[in-house]
Length: 285
Image (cartoon, rainbow, N blue to C red; front, side, top):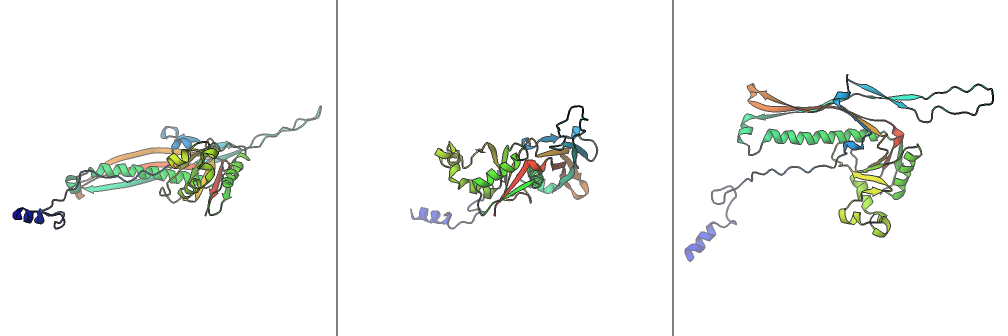
């Protein structure tokens, strides 16, 4: 028994060092991927033009100017007044975004993971985040801004809805940054079942609709335009559009003189606001 106790002391994990023969160190053949960010879905755009619909480096969209062409009272036998609608334009110029991935052949041979495929998959996430960043840049051109205080209030949301409605648009969506989401969770009206009509906020930590608006959160790590204290109320049928002249494209490459393999991933995309008065921005401090 004494000998057994001595052996137990020698193989104790307290005395062992991971990586030694005494206690082998195992690297699990599983890679834990980074978290998926909350991004803006394409269906929120008024229009999405694809490569087959775009020719040339840019194109222009014509917009009818609201509240032009008036009807006037005309006296009997008098000349009927001439009038016509006015137009404005928005130009889309898709820009090229890309990243090149290069990995040594030794890394590919010795790695426990498919390094090239993993890098390409993560690059795809970055392109999606870039699209969200471009959308938020377009929404930042909002025709009206509601300046809130330290915390978001119900009146801030109502004011932005009014700004959109006052220009004859119909507010449909409310995109919110992380801090405004936190403010919403602290507004009793959206938490108490007897006021909100349900317990969605308590059950899921988020409420899906406010005053009929679809509420969605965007990650504040999606890019420079993703600000935690910003929110946007807009009419999705009129607010912004996306032009994609090159979908996400992956081209495999080899560099024999460097003994490396890789890929070049590119996309050509542009996002522009169509009618800025269909967008109202809410800011808090």
